[in-house]
Amino acid sequence: MSDARRASPALKLHLGLVYVFLYAPIAVLMVLSFNRGGMPTAWTGFSFTWYAKLVHSPEIISSTVNTLIVAVSSTFIATVLGTLLALGVERRRASSGLDALLFAPMIIPDIVLAIALLSFFTLLEFTLGLHSIILSHAVFNIAFVCAVVRTRLRHFDHSIVEASIDLGASEFTTFRRITLPVIFPGVLAGALLAFTLSVDEFIIAYFTSGAGSSSTTLPMRIYSMIRFGVTPEINAMATIVMLFSFALVFFSQRVDRSGANKGALTGE
Image (cartoon, rainbow, N blue to C red; front, side):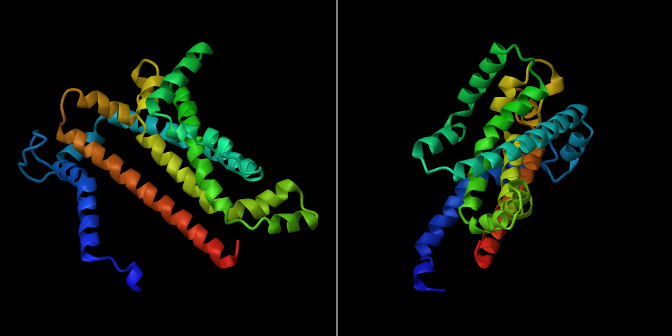
């Protein structure tokens, strides 16, 4: 390893302190989720009681199912539209104004986007429910999918597309046999990121869900429970959600990185 890449002891200490600052609260929450007693901050012994209670809770199961329905559906919509958007944008001349317009949903505060979507649904007299949450999450996630796929497209060798068309293949065949397989790691990484964001998202779902428990997602259920105080049951639920989210983000990063490395090795 070169001297330029060898971290000094002070830099390592600083990095360690940053990690402690970021993840110490999460570690405490995870440890307390195994607390035997009902007090969320007083350790009384190790137990899986609260995890077992989650499994046997109809409200939690229903909220989890709703969350998965919303996440899978919105991810599919956002992945298709975000990928097509990335392909269209990359064929145009670079424009900072267009980029700012595309990535605005990523920058706008969630509560502003949630109010805007709720106002739009109200203006159209659109009934709220799981379907409105799905559409809202798709709107929120399209920009993220587009950003990830565009990163992959910047390492794409467009000459192979031109060669395919010159050899007589149609544009659809070229996309299906050439373009999509090459950019698929980026598409998959964008889909996993969109799925993770949809599972964790609360504010937009809260504003666009409508009345009734039939459209309550898991983050909304956690919010309704935490208003009466933090319990080990909430800690257990939060631990599961965080571990699931971390696993998806880690996998999406691995997929995107492996796809980029493969493209660099093959000259794509």
